[in-house]
Length: 450
Image 1 (cartoon, rainbow, N blue to C red):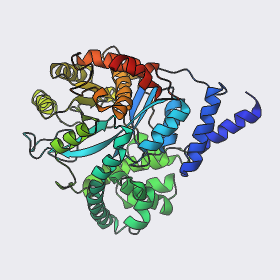
Image 2 (cartoon, rainbow, N blue to C red; image 1 turned 135 degrees about the vertical axis):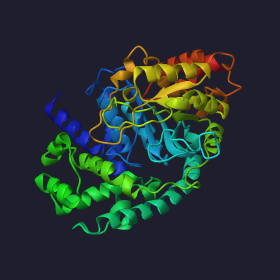
Image 3 (cartoon, rainbow, N blue to C red; image 1 turned 180 degrees about the vertical axis):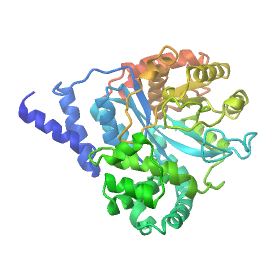
Image 4 (cartoon, rainbow, N blue to C red; image 1 turned 90 degrees about the vertical axis):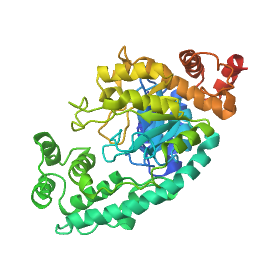
């Protein structure tokens, strides 16, 4: 590669995560041209990840930046998932097509289990009883506006709670040198609220971290401030990271410390209005042709990833829970191989087969420290999740064209096939499409589905 072209590509790589949408899409277009001319190449792995958060909830990645980071990680598929927001979807799909990487979009939402047999249980949410996280995958383009309309009231109610949480945090730090955190001036600007994005507790913690860094610059000053003024006891490894002012993940590491030490103290439980009844979310997702998926967490003993404390979640009543999920219409369960033991996954997989549920996997990315790669998915007990991801991509494109072409539609031409057979067909179609022209899957599918 000529030096001038190499320099241009380096510049574009920096621009693709610009805060200016026009700049990053122009960069994606030009990088895509370099890829198609073979000036920029990669060896594609089997790995996929369809659970990447963007700046439309909380993440260092713009949608185009996330697509390119996945491309650089040699992933075959990238998907955006944001809390209470679908606003990254159009850009994720557009940028991914420019870069020639298969893509899928969806959203994540807290759902209410208060009217279920599990109302008084900790399900998959560390902070709340009777409230569970669920994902809605494979949202077709034609339904993006309807999803935003569905989520907008949830965001509005959540922001009432967010303001109250900022007040609660201010009460905790009022004796420090930080001054008050202002929701309007310090928190909202960190979000994409005005573009349909959501504000989460991580935004509040990020504003908290920024306040600290203004009065105690990164390094020893920050560590001293945490230990003396905020009375936070730092572990050896984290203390070492925060003592290093050159740590490129400094803000996210500091945020993590604050999350563990302060979030439980200012967190306010979501109201029933904010946590829409699980059956309502499932029915809405199915009505637009998307795939609602319960997000399995599983008991944490010795955390596989080292980022969770020992805690019990669904495992004690998992058989009953999965049976109930199938009963109320869930067609899928999503889980994360790096976060679960082999025994947990084997048990869950058997239950999915028993209740004819699709298995979906993706590892949530919301920090610069996290890797987009998930080699655990390639283990013998998880490799089938790769085809599930490809089938998800196909489903999303095909159901946008014809609702009866959805994986779970009762009038599908493949409705009499088993779920495993349908996934196999859809995965093959997605793998054969041109990722630079995702609509090419329609011609391929017409030979199979008509």
